[in-house]
Image (tube, rainbow, N blue to C red; front, side):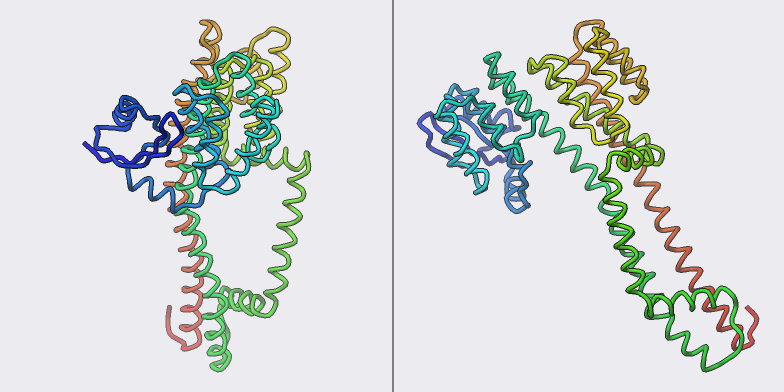
Length: 397
């Protein structure tokens, strides 16, 4: 048994918070429902405290908004009353204002999806289209539940990738700082000593000392060059041609990871849309927007064209040759059995797990590569200095 904290509301809109002992979160939810209140959030106390201390982005607010609205609608509360409760619950001032604006639009006669469309920075087109499909089919609570699962999966995947890259990034920065200190602070002191002692220096030492002196005297040129190159590259990547070539390069360097990432994104998005009742053509068009790699996204255009011609998606996807063979086989089976939406979700789950393994493998190779690279550079500097010392003092190395 574990202790969970919860936030809930009564049918008249009164907010309640407390703790309860139960086996898991599902048991907490059932106990709260049986007592006549509507659970909005259930978490272990440590997780709840951690969430409040962390920075809350608009995407995090969107997930909380979706989860809580789904819980309220599933409990039978009308939409306007649910939104009114959420506006009072929201800890984010920005989100509170947005919810109040949406509520005002609905009371003035707008549909929920149209009210959401007035805030494109918070609610993406994919989100709005799913809500519109839920409204048309009268299953808004079900669609919100699926959206909550979708946002949670996307958040979990993003956090896994981010956390996996933290240590290699710190390692690279620390190594870069160490080399910079050696070149700009330590080596100049040796340069003064060698100048006073006289004598010829080994070629490697001369190269390093020349580079060190150049960095000290013209560091601003190097910094300015880096800034100019960075701005130029950034502007080039913003263009259609530059972005496409950059994505081609990324596919060559990290093809396995990128393909698995885009496959998981595309399949989960398309599967969620189809399960929510969005038509295939519209679902494909929306799912394309979540693909960040332009090479893969451009291939989806051919898939969309094939779907409009009645070819389905399995054949055009196979012809595009951008998704892994296993994913294509599973999609083909799903299409043939009439369970395309369920199979797409299975493909997404499969490749999300596979992606985590691929990232772990990449990090396990990247970390020693960084350490080895930094070690070789520092070792070369140290050996060059030792060779110079032995050369000046006429000692055998």
